Length: 85
Image (cartoon, rainbow, N blue to C red; front, side, top):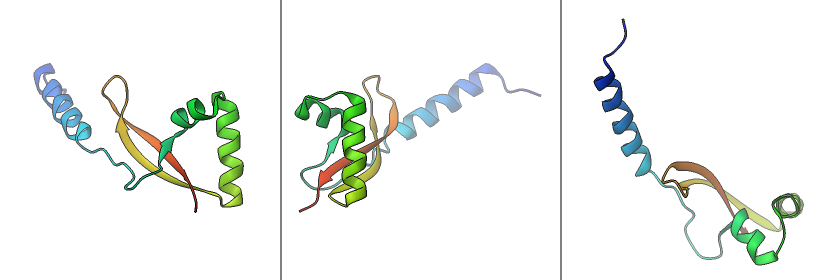
């Protein structure tokens, strides 16, 4: 037995609304996404991620895993990075 389409639509709207309010971002200054770092460094996606990975292994960078809204308004997973002091 399947649910009527109106009930499924209600669930979709409810879940979307609850997810859109659950952003989890890092607290404090100095946090940047890989996309923002690539613009600052003037590098591409692969070079940026390779460099960040090497810095993480050396313990020179902190990483925060969280959630934010993307360009389409969907709540997605994202990582922020900052240089350790």
